[in-house]
Image (tube, rainbow, N blue to C red; front, side):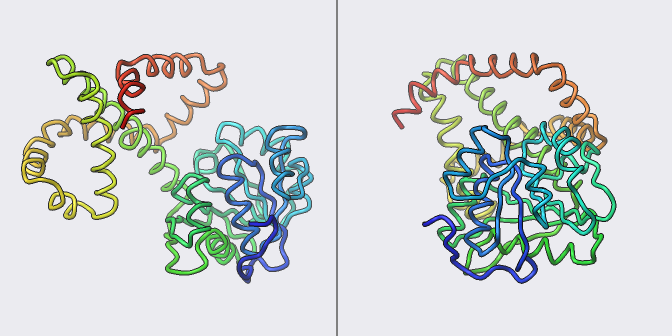
Length: 326
């Protein structure tokens, strides 16, 4: 699609407004392009001479330093990485904010946990696509739905809710039902971080590793163990997403369904749920945010060590050997 080509009318609440997308990473690039294709006037704020700055220029956007973009815009979309947001907000965004402007976030983390403290007089909204930036862009171009969660933290003008809905329309498909759901900043932040830690990343990886280790210890070839613990898991998760619980248990073999229903709770039982509740509490009361901020401030040595250790697990070798052949 030609840069700047409008594929549909601008949402009414954004007509005549200039929107600054701050940060041009995976999410920033996708949102900026979708907004522009929806008729929104978009500029990009990025670090001068950085990779993102050059990429935004190649994509045809007016690009400038973050502070200047905020000064020129009616709404500033803060799509900078979580760990950089606090400092960038204090040093570059806050000095350029004027009453009546809109601060837009796509993750509630920094606002919900007090890392970013928006001033009075500005609207503060959340529009959170539950998809990677690349998937959001793909869905937009194909006219598909991506679930969007919207929220208002501060309504200084009386129009914050309408503005959030307008942004959701600008990111959604031109045709078909628009999936926009309401939540609070804290609910989005806690749910997102908890899901990553206990289910989609931390939990899923630990289950896969435990199953893989058990199989290999009992003599199953690593390539076969990898297939059953990773490749088949993807098939089942895709089925769960497409058809729900009922469609899943009726959509697999009866042996698989009976075994999963009769044994699954022995794997994920009350002890696991107890740990999940504790993890949820650590996130909800800010302990995790404090721990993560401290780790980042110390240079992330422990974090790097954990990533290196994960990369050395035997499951990784099986992935390289069997995964590339599947």
